[in-house]
Image: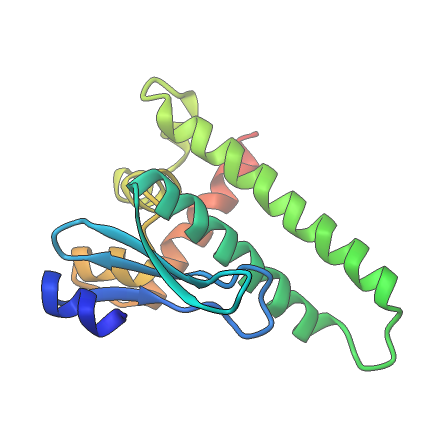
Length: 166
């Protein structure tokens, strides 16, 4: 299926889910800004549907939340951990991240936000690209001609400044 899409639309960015993730959609974004979701239906048959950009970014957000939860579990839980405690903590961790993302996005949408003075213009632009447009660190780094680590550092510092501002 992916090959068919690449033949028809050219090079694509493909986001495959982790095998342990709850969200099992493979997301595809073409260079011509067509968006697709690949998944297996209830009968186990592979399906491909074209989706809107908004749906693509919503599914991408779910995928990132799954990835964040799985990374948290890997870092913080050993084999003997209580499974119920794990699910409660990871849900709280994900919830806190979602709330923070929502607050940051709301600030970034408001062009007259007083929070803008807390960060540099470059940090503000990168925050908008990441939180409002849903671009990955790799995509922003490619646009800015720098490394993914530079974007990570820039956004981390910007978020710390916003925390201090409030």
